[in-house]
Length: 139
Image 1 (cartoon, rainbow, N blue to C red):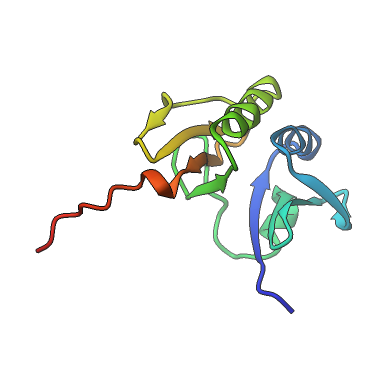
Image 2 (spheres, rainbow, N blue to C red):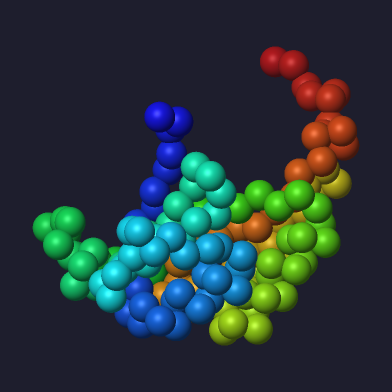
């Protein structure tokens, strides 16, 4: 079996969050979804489990972080072009996400940030390795 990653996020409104992540381009895997959580598929090996607070709390003894006021992690999604970055962001903003930062263009990488309803922060980026600076200083 290939290695996979499952990111688990606590959400207050499962349907609203499902609609948001679907707008970003995630697909729902019904096999791992029910009325307490949805398995949102980004790619063959990358999954985001959006779980009600009650369901999420059943996996840990720690309190759930208030990610609207504190950062708990930065998650990044790669895109195949700047146009795809902008398309993903446009759909996410229409679905109710917020863009807390301006677009960042590093020459070889364009990056935009979107937050979901619970404050989970996603960096959507396109990286063109042919433009990556090769003249790095040596120490």
